[in-house]
Image (cartoon, rainbow, N blue to C red; front, side, top):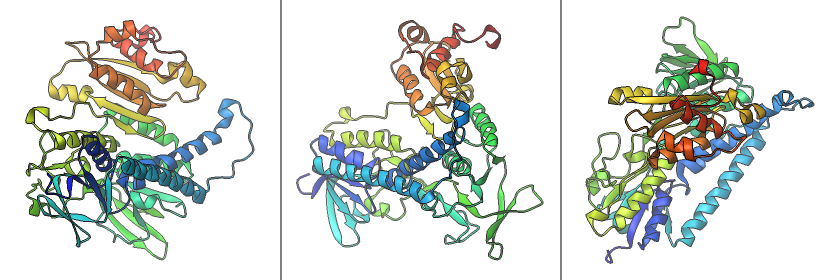
Length: 470
């Protein structure tokens, strides 16, 4: 590799790219990362972190308004200050972005600012002028929001998830097109700040990738927040009404149109692969994403691809995990030293209540022909949840009937995104439900007790589940 500028170059500095670059350096490779915008990518700058910062503010505001449920007297709350919420969000993003820059520097990773594209399998051109060569290359270019075709991209009445983070004024009525993760979280945020929100989802349920029981429960809870959920509906037409300063929307199966101050498109993301000259590098795609093998190698042996640009599942933590593995494989000397992705992928949704899942559920088990056992524990029977006034939802655990080992879980409820890791750890450790029940002691009072009870309920031995509910 000595004939090249670098042993490894990572194209894209997002959650997959910068992690891959640091791992490459850890493995003794002279490494660079090319980033067209800011390190941290969509996740840090326009996705995971800024949305969670805003959601944290909205969720606290929601809790403040129900302080009386905790026995607290309060004066009238003044309301949400969108400018201050946005500044807090921006400050968090800046701090973390600076932290990543320092990490890259400390690990001797060269950061090259600019848009990179391939000239050949070992050469990248940055901003159409600077040539960078590498023995190995990892593509981590990510994705961007898809645009709904009815209105022009510069319409004042339609925004995407990136633009939603920069609003200077809250709408009174908001239509969210798409009830997936982004749509649900955004709807939750705006509703808690007093916006009249409607979600329209083409599929039969919101959160189409989650268990139907979870989606049904969240939709019912959203109704309590005055979020209108319309599933199995297609947007037929959107027109600008400049005089009324709104967008007029026609939905499939409805005779009357509806007016909204703003329309948020949350219909998914499109991969950033068409602009980087993949053909010149001999990298093949299936028309939507880069084709990779189980070791994250593309059709060009020295080029790897990770994250949104090469995955069916677009999650930051998946991209980071893939980045570590791809960098290890880029430094491997022999085929036998190559690594694969080992872990079940957790899904985490930061609504109130939170939603998290991994592995096999009932619907997947049926498709795969796997016989499973299931256990469930409701948060409204848990002391800590009642103390916290957050008792919506449940933990549901699935075990293989043949081995009694945990193979999946669904959680909807407080701290679901944290609790799911316990069940994941039990699953990848190959522990049986009997081993967990006999050897694992869950502290009291904690939310994690719901995990233990749901596992014990698989064998109908849960202490705090009444016999009538089994």
